Length: 142
Image (tube, rainbow, N blue to C red):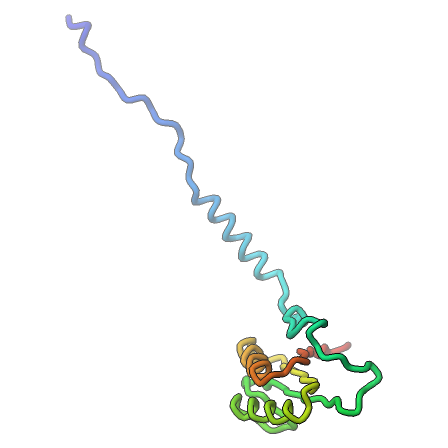
């Protein structure tokens, strides 16, 4: 009868490209690299470049002294076995640095110390004016 009457169907669209699987793979790779990388080497946090440090004789100098700050597991800085507040550490550092500008500061974080405690102590020491600072990590030997 009516041959002119026909149903017009839409053409099927191509397959949709979904970004969800790619995002899943990228997330898995991100987690993998975060878990397998190590951040235990604290030497990658430079205090100052070698050229910025004051010149000192390698055999030892009469006026060179060392100030050791240990960071406990609670995050508090310790000097000579006494816990110190960050303000007291800054005052002590300022007094020592006015007497000896070439004072060498060694920071020794314990294994249980948080990274934020280390950064706070480093900030306090550099804020007091220290230019010769090292972060030391001790490793247990079998």
